[in-house]
Image 1: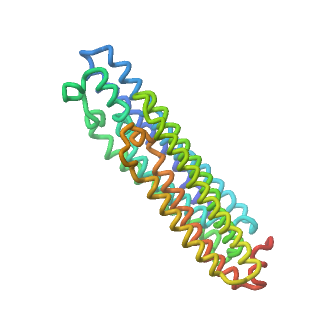
Image 2: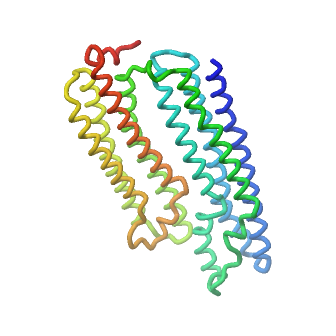
Image 3: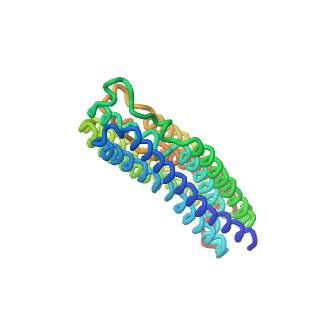
Length: 344
């Protein structure tokens, strides 16, 4: 129980860390507001409009980054709760779930560092504003992104996020000590990991469609363009999500058949390779910029859209590879793997 208690304390540490990061992001937003007011002092009519654009991005992004820490603490807390109860029916989920959550959390900490609330989207949002209102027509902007970020911000944020990552990484190891991997029912674990694929396909569609909707709103607000590009993106998302869902659903069915019949694993392994290629195709299709795209839609995608898709697709691929490994071990077990699927 000591290892579980230590894991719980390290997980709870994410909440004060999230509070510290939120405070830093609010401070940098306040600093950016001061820069805007000082830079546009000669044109008071532009101040409120510029601050509206700042708040549309900076405060929303600050809340989203803060929510990251809360979501991690809740999800890892649920995993720790399962480990604490020690039920053999569900405890097999603990090692892989804790590892996936911890690595995803560290990945998102890096993205939180890159997601400076007053950078990137804020400047895309301001560009048309500067051009339409005059300041950029002279060839100079009234202030730059560097001016809105104080010297103390980046280093302090980096140190805070590194500390959050250092506290999170030991959690899976502590939980693995509390529930040794050798005691896992491989058949049940294989099915659980195979089911990650269909869930990831649905989540992929949700994240991408939400990101497309957000980008469409921002582009419409500034330029009124990109309707056609947004419609194409919606259609592409549905096609890719359907492809991933069908492949992963077939893989889940093959996993069940393999474990219950103990037959050849070749179809399962071969389709896993095809599924991996489909994940790579989807990944490259989403992270690449649209060719000849001039509406601004691509630039207005929210900061979490591409990292979220990368996270989902990588986790889906790793889960499927682990599912094959567990299915092979479960198939070679007693009773052709059926005992592994039976309730313990």
